[in-house]
Amino acid sequence: MTAAAASDDSQNGHRKHHAGNGGAPHPVSGGPIVQLPTAFGDFVAQAWTDLVTGVEHLAVSSPNPPSDGKAPLVRLHSECLTGDVFGSYRCDCGEQLAYALELIHEHGGTLLYLRGQEGRGIGLANKIKAYALQEAGFDTVEANEQLGLPVDARCYKAAAQVLAEMGLHEVRLLSNNPDKQNRLAKAGVKVVEMVPTEVPSREQNIRYLRTKKDRMEHRLLLDTGAHPVPVPGPDGPFRHEQD
Image (cartoon, rainbow, N blue to C red; front, side, top):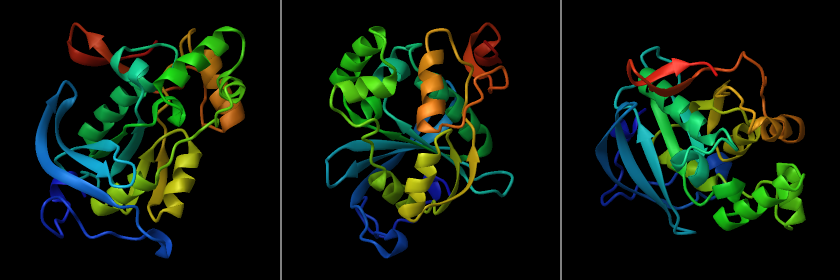
């Protein structure tokens, strides 16, 4: 089900809460659904507020249901200012975001942009400190540990509740990270398939990606078998090109 088709169980953006696996739901509140034309195609968007933390997230959805009758594609995309906005090559976040939006526009589904999860939940300033440690020789896991911070401080309770409120109880998850699948399952969202979002590695991020594969169990190939990513080109706003 898309955001446009989600059932409105009550007024003013508040919907009936659904508890996953019998647990208490994480309270969230949804706003109006609006049109969002982008370089990747036309979407609909809905802002969601985590009523526990006050953090605001954004659901960007295809206005059309999946054409193949399968469960909708869903991407939980953690905010990454450096990658998403400035196109940093230190990570693969911005390219994964672009690739996911292309897939969702073509095949149907939702991208949930999770704010407040910068640097796997440690914040922008700490992420930059971690970058400095990485430049001194530490990998991304070691850098967080040197700062006395968790390797991954993200929480997906609000994300799972937003998906439930949107009627997305069974999804095909766009991710290379099995931990997201496990956490969604505990929150009552069934992941029927993991759809890889690996993009070509770069010289600037290959060590980071190897650490994610070797130490964080991300499902990465780290070779030319990775999916192409959309990049600006002369044939249109975006075209596929392999690095």
